[in-house]
Length: 71
Image (cartoon, rainbow, N blue to C red; front, side, top):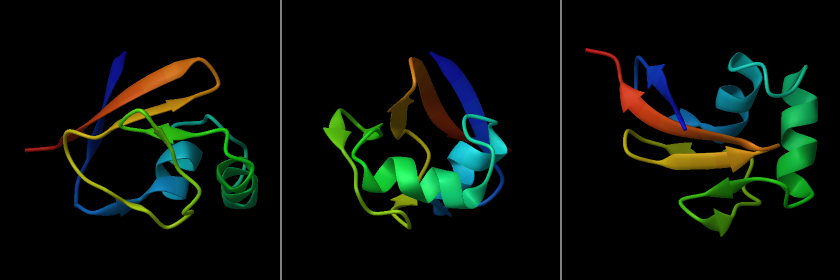
């Protein structure tokens, strides 16, 4: 598991996948979310614009990301 710092919360799920390099584009991020390949806090997430906050855990493509707020 690796920590991912965000500067503002909430942040949309698809943006985190894109900015962390887990997908190439925002469109690809939206597609993998729609295809039920992403979990947030242990549950499959299909909302592309789901609001992610500090403490959330995202799982995708063998990666686990813990969201922390940048201070």
